[in-house]
Length: 329
Image (cartoon, rainbow, N blue to C red; front, side, top):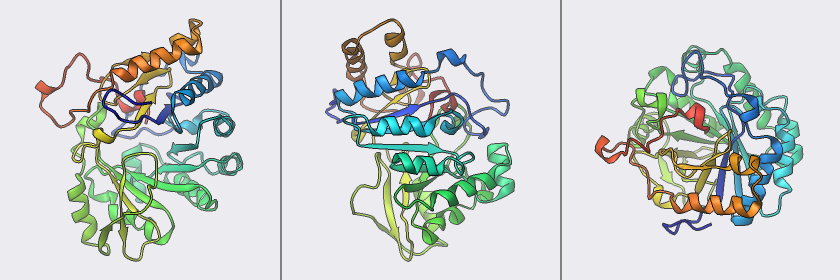
């Protein structure tokens, strides 16, 4: 699909649930956010129908996210069905890893292409502070289990918060000791993320550069679906990557759209605009009608976000008010 700016949109991120087993401080309040009725969450057959229509329009890569996708039952089966869908070339998944260990073998069996595991610190006390749960051990178990399946691309996602106890160098060293890519994701000023300053890519390079060997820009084949740019580090088995949506805006190369767990199609993370695909399905709409609605949304995909810009630049009636926990990763 080509949008009005000439960008090739071939990547769909799907939030499969509104539930999570952690309470990360930059994602949701300690008490969590109110769950919607399960009847409002897309059913498996609805997700598959939307993906089939999207594939016919040109979507080739699918990322399954959530709040935490592995709290939803039958995820390996959903991956298997997506992998067998005509037109879909790659299916990947993002998880906090807490429930991964016992499902990893099934994901490998059905052909999952890639796995991103969120890990913001290796320090137990800091992990409890960030996630408000004591689950670091199970996340690390999930990572170790995933490393036993080298056919599945493994990446670690870390959101720097400016907390010294995070010890970002310790996270980066995972890429030295294992063939795993570690990506540092800049804080997005959405929902509770607005309460954190975050750490810019330049600051990160300075922090990491004090303790790690020299960095050099990676110029090989793309290592994923999206905008992450990578560095080779001397003596490291994996790469170090940065996704810096605010300080290094990449909207001109954006190739993605998002589907919330309730079936709302979003074309830009910042803005609330989009289309309700669940309503199309449950009101008896045809595949052709769904395609029309999708293309209407795509025709309105903005040139880019204005995170970090002045409030005057942001149209308050269109700016997204939900937190990331409600939108999906």
